Amino acid sequence: MKQNRIQVENYHESGILAQKILDSGIRKLAVVSCEDYAGKSTLCRMLALYFMNQKRIPVKLCEFNMRHPKHILNDLTNKSKKSDLQNPILETCTPPQNFMQLSSFERQKWLQQNLDSEDPDQIIIIDTSPIHIYNQNNIHPIHLKEFVNDFIIVVNTHTTTHSDYLAAAKIFESNGMTILGTVLNYHLGPHVKDYASLTHWREIWQKIKILTRKFNVKLKLAFRSLIKNNPGLENGR
Image (cartoon, rainbow, N blue to C red; front, side, top):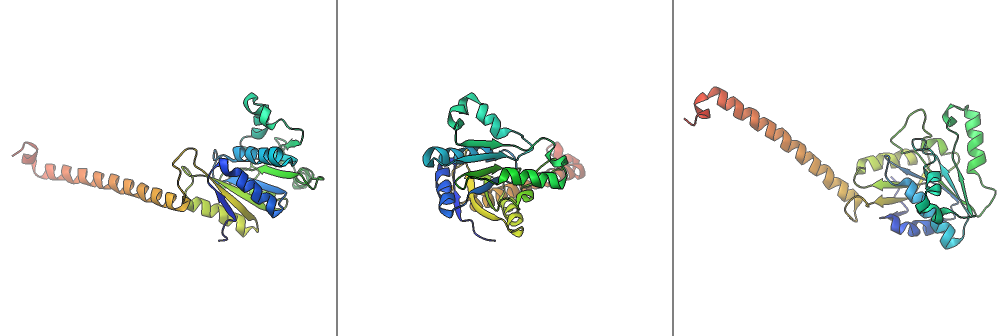
């Protein structure tokens, strides 16, 4: 598997990732995760703020997570966040609710109209559905491969195993898509440097707990069998 170009450990380092995007000349990218509630929308928002406020670059935010339609747009109207994202150089879009019921031609036409920019300086950021959660009403990230090539994977280190992450990365790379970088989301858990090591030891600990439970069950069954075959033991004789 190809090695990621860059890895950052928290949203607070999103500026590092944003600068890497600028240095690479990329003007269109999608943010994905392995499961829901990993922090994709938050990262999209942080990247948009960096581009607009620090670099004065126009941004287009596209909400493609049909499990939570208009998630980013709700951020825009939230009073606590409105002052951050109320910016004349910000543009937003979200597919119609019946998007997946449209014909293939209509879907392609909508994507082309909304994921292409007439402004060469504008950066398009797409918030996608989780890679491992798919149903007929979802716009799967793979559906976007004709319109966007570069992806950022957000990893919630408390819920995403390293094997799940590798499986997601393999899906992208086998479809000719590029993993631009990885954001390790530690806001719900310990701050560690090595995600692979973290998930490795977590998986070992889960196996230990399972083996311990199995051992306890076998020990109880053995004790009951011993008492049954030796009634005197129960009375201390």
